[in-house]
Image (cartoon, rainbow, N blue to C red; front, side, top):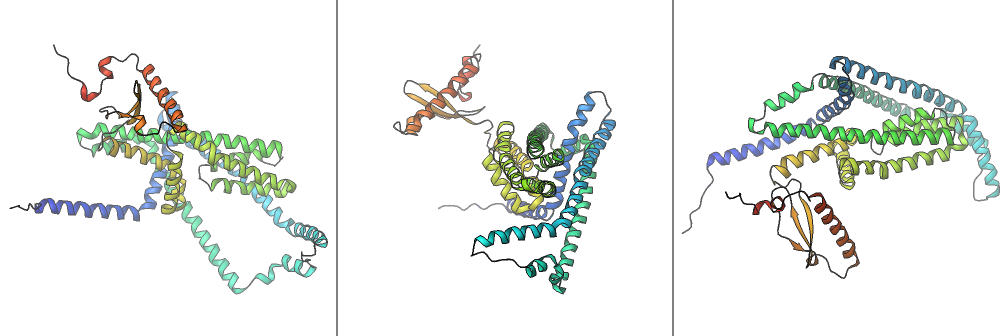
Length: 430
């Protein structure tokens, strides 16, 4: 007769409370997602400013002086960029609105000239033109109410954005001033036998963010040089250097940054060289495509060692879940997630760190096995996976053979005992 074993009540209650705490924690994090994203943004700003601060410290500056120099230089550069690009944009926009009626007259005249040769096109008369130039007929109580609501919503968004930005900047300055105290506080909450693990995790998290920042800097530099040269030298658009710098800075905003950066360039072109508006728009489109499809994926693949396709899917998911701010922070969030998964799951739970396929050529063919630092699986013949008659099999064999030869050359100084699988090693007998 089988006996039924029941879970002790204490263990059952422990699991129930653990599950409930996990659900409550997830719900609380979701409600506080904006605060968490702002905190993450503050950490990124602090890490980015910490790079030049540490460089100044290496040159003999005290940390407080280095922080003051870096912050003042950053504010000066941002203010200079805003002055160089902001004042001309306002002036050129005002000129566009002043010249808009005359430009509309010229467009209508050109259209009527074309319509004379094409019977299917209707003519635009003076009445329609006057109605288009006179917006008084469009002003109704409903439009006034809708416009007031729109202006109010825009104003509240600007105020909320400004307040959040100030809070993020203040938090980043606090983090930059004394980062050790926050790291020490985290380590103090960790059991002693896991403090080394947590320290390595914190170091790798910072290393991932720094790698992303350097990659982003390369991409920004390339976009700045390309647009500045194309707009200024080829098309003769005014303020080309400022436009290139603005486009480079806005590449930090995936997908939408290039659209925002194109608006001042289009305004300058319409005001100064309207005949070049189509080439200028094409220049922005081509540059955006190069940045999003070639430049950024190239640097991400070469320096960050992350799959570009997975990053794109993650960007879409984060954009849907967290909106514009999540889309802005998608790439560094992806880097942090990769590090956490590698440390907390792949290494700690699965013990599969540095797992890869190893190829070895034998008399019977190429043998494949999965290996990492602590184990090696049984070898599987390549012919059991791929058909020998397939043309792609030959190229795959060449790749695997080159991998095997490269590893043999790199491990030429390793002893025969070290080349054996870890499971097969035996202690030396005296």
